[in-house]
Length: 286
Image (tube, rainbow, N blue to C red; front, side, top):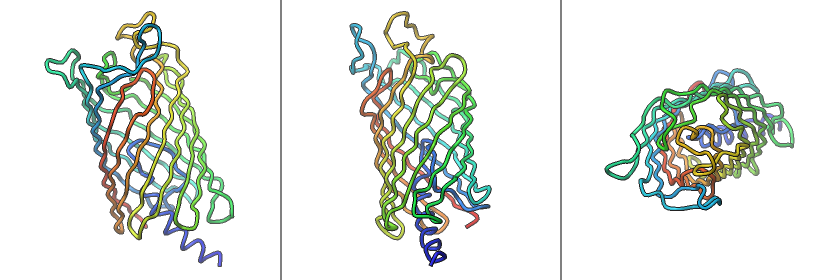
């Protein structure tokens, strides 16, 4: 009976794991089997016409006439080291510019931050009636780009992150997970606390529908257009983001394709981005 449960659940978890391979590097409890893994190519297009910043001493959501648009191509991967251990990585190339012409800010491009992580799952739902639980430790290595413009593609600082993750599949149909963590960077970039809430619905033999709510809260006190603001403090402003996304993944044996839509619903010192992403994943070793 236990073998039957493991065999059925393993197939379901493999399907969920494909859909959990997202554009943004969230942690997951659904790890690849030892010696197995995946490689994903992602393309993200995002656009913003509004911005959260200080107006008359208060944080406000106002039009941003230059507008912002950014395209990014990511390559990411995961690999199972052992039954409860996996490593992951992600890097890409990005270009950001104003939508206005002539543009008041320069178009910037470069290599994105390199993210590397290792996850240890210390509780497995396949072997017990409880949820799967894991911890993830990550490294952030700053990319190659300029930082002192609104069109910067990142903070330009190295860092580390640590998170705890919990997840469970219900009735081989619905998978729910949550992640809570902290991110610390060098160069006086503010510490961030982040949370991810994910839901995956197994809608068919090959189709998984997914929803995510992401929260990022910064410990900094520097605001755009606040006291002492110049463009040279942009990497150090306190950026809060609440982002919602919906999408789906189609899986066929070793390949899967995904489409996802993102919307920033609230924030602080951040652009009101709408985004769409497409992913192509190759699974190996299983």
